[in-house]
Amino acid sequence: MSTLRVHQQLIGKILHFLYERGLSKTDISSRMAQEFYEGTTLEGEKGFATFSDVIDWMEQEGIISIVNNSKALSGSFNHYGVQLTSYGISLIQNQKFEELDKNTIEEVIESSNGEISSEKYGKIGSLIGGIIGGVAQSVG
Image (tube, rainbow, N blue to C red):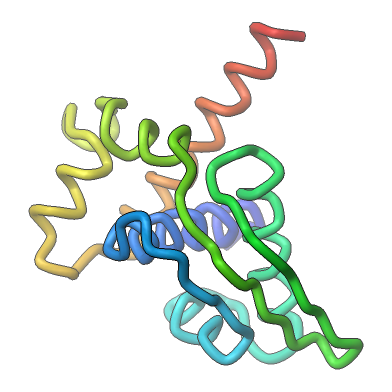
């Protein structure tokens, strides 16, 4: 599995996690990361770094906001006060995708009963990356 595909799965899983929390700020730590990268090729400190990089990317792209970050040399991290932005919510609620059987990400999450495959998480992450890339191309 490509590194990008793993990152896309993580994006989908993180969006699902934050969607379930609404606008409540939540802390995400390296201890929690293993739950997110279960079913991928990630493990250990490399997994921590990759997971934290994905969170950082989502913040830089405006999908989530983070109040504060703490990263240790050992690879462990804490992201404090993580929540979806209005842009992140819009991506989840308003975009219908052919690849998701013409559903929104919200509809996929709501109909899943908490059971979403790694493949579907990968599709969600890929679609989010595609939208952000499309916006960047139209502006640049």
